[in-house]
Image (cartoon, rainbow, N blue to C red; front, side, top):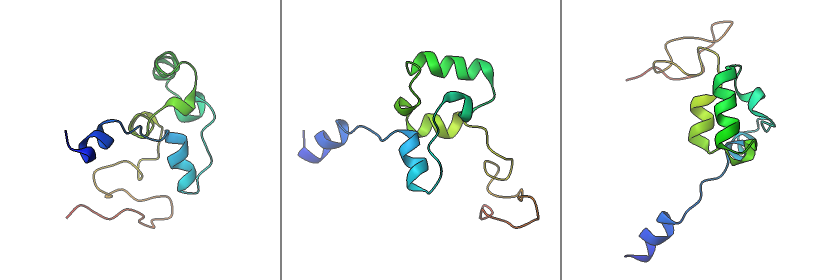
Length: 90
């Protein structure tokens, strides 16, 4: 195996909370802050041993509650006030 492939294979992704912080957002301190969906929250707590800092970026991105304009069909929806923050799909 090439050394580059080995290093990628052994890489550990940073927690979702680290990515939030790197974008200037407040760190999520609990699964309750991430989602209001009680069933999803309980499943995440069980899966990640009640430690939100173990949650990977992809899990946090798809499990979190977001306004409609933040996670949509390429930016067609707009935030309150009409200012578009995401670019429309090409």
